[in-house]
Length: 240
Image 1 (tube, rainbow, N blue to C red):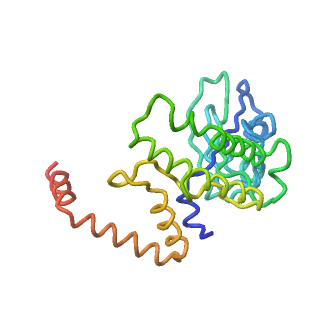
Image 2 (tube, rainbow, N blue to C red):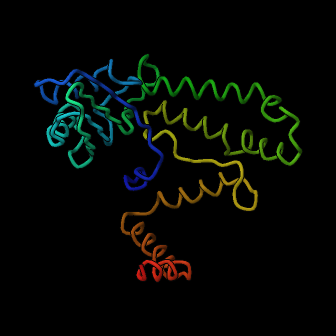
Image 3 (cartoon, rainbow, N blue to C red):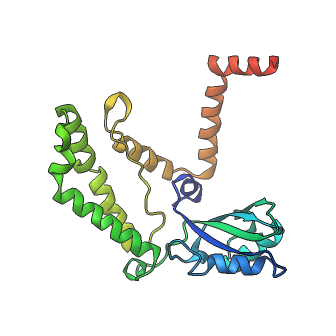
């Protein structure tokens, strides 16, 4: 998948956290503890993360924190963003959000403790519930026929939620990344199901190279700049 398109898809962020009393031990101890198995909210492989967002509190050098995260994960320095806050000189802590720390192993979804296994089990349970409880999903609380129609299409329609969850299962079994590539909505433009439209637009986008994507973005930006709404806003800003 084109890396530029991948960056636009909703990521999975795994928080990693550690705290200690303020000391002279340096940034390495905090970063190591946060990225250890005990510091991760969900078990995962930090070396597979695409990016890291790091929030620190205390007297730490952002450049040193970035170097430690890089050394521990292999994430390129330019993909590590550090946001620092001065502490109280009593405690220091670090919160690291790892972006998409999974993928590449077809066996991961079978391995206990992996992020892939956790997501795989949740999706399987979701599919099971959808298939075994159509009455609870559609008939609950006496929905109108109009609402039932949209719910039925969204949950059980071709290429809609149930089918897309099954596609996610296939991606996990193949070790693919990302897992979720089709945002779905029940109500789209003029009340229509939007999943198919989103899917076709993404398929078209995936076939574009970087220069074509940049050209499309420039075109859309130029259209916006020429609108009356944009012109009026610019005039108000210049007057201020």
